[in-house]
Structures are given as structure tokens and as C-alpha cells.
Length: 128
Figure 1: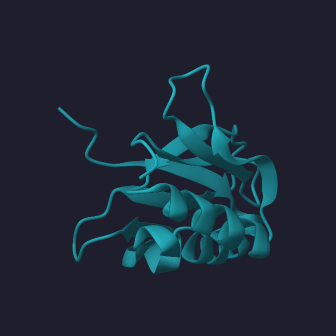
Figure 2: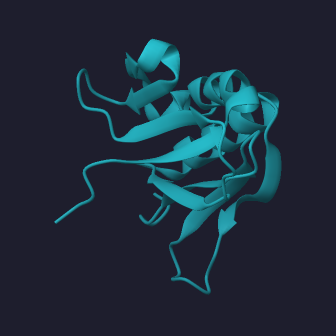
């Protein structure tokens, strides 16, 4: 069984900046805006038409930051995510590289989004 979709809530005053960041940062994974609700306050991203698995909602409530990981098909995609995410204004929280303490082929990168969420992209396959 897999998770069908998940999402984050971000401060309303950062919502536009966060959405623009995700558009750039997730582009190497094939993600783009697929759905919008509530006058653009709820934005859904996906890598297939009508299949949203990442939601970003603006809110006036206090929010906590969190960690989310996306799977990459290869290490080059992890590298491309990191470059795009940092160039779009994210803060590096761990450059692309092997994280052998997880397993020998765990290749990941971590970037903080504009709201402070720790976004990771990881490839579990060996380098070929």
C-alpha cells in the first residue's frame, strides 16, 4: 500500500512564494500545478493529469514545519532538484550525496522551502 496524497499548510502571507518555489523545485521530478481550489488558496501538484499527491494550503493559523521526501528515478534527478530548489530561493539543508547510515545506495538532498519545511528528494537505486 502506498500513500495516495499528502500536503502542508503554510502561512497565508508566504503562500504565493511557497507555490512559486514548489513549481521550480519539483519541476525536475515532473511535478506541476494540477488543481486549484478555494480561489487559489489550495494548490495541488502532481506528475500526472488529475493525479495530485502534493497539496499546499495557505492558512492564517499557526503552522509547524515538517519533513517530506519525494522519490527520484535516478541520482541526476536528485541533483537537479537540489539545484532548482536552491536557485528558487530554498536553503540547502544537506547537499546531494550518499547517506550510508540509512543504506549504501541512499542518495538524497535536502532543501528548506520558503516556509521552513525540510523537503528531500531521494534515489534508492545504485549509481549506474
